[in-house]
Length: 180
Image (cartoon, rainbow, N blue to C red; front, side, top):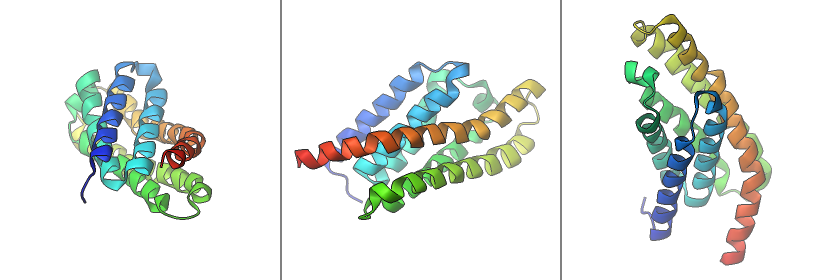
């Protein structure tokens, strides 16, 4: 896949937006921050394409860890690749309807399905496999927080990003059509 200059530029801007959103991250705002990150991933995939969406999906968890210094990921670094995989699964659902004529009709359904798929992947891989296998040295309170963060909280964040994308993407798409 060859990326055009515009695509590379927009991808870089989206990475920068992810960093800015993550800078305002407080422990109680994970669903809000996560929702905005999911929105950025969705809009980027719809505008720039699959490769760009995958890049953002892989870079966002890394920048989040660098910025927040999450003690959970520091204790169990195996979590990080599975966050990326969960994001990529959602990107694949977004990409599935990107080029279709019925995009705006199918997009909400695809995004909701992608949100649940992301939640399923992250719950099965992180909560049901990684934490019980590699997170045994976590304090009980931290273990519970990790289990909640990488299961239902991810679903809420993905659904929040989905709702925002369903409102914002038709407006962005209209603006794109006018500029071409």
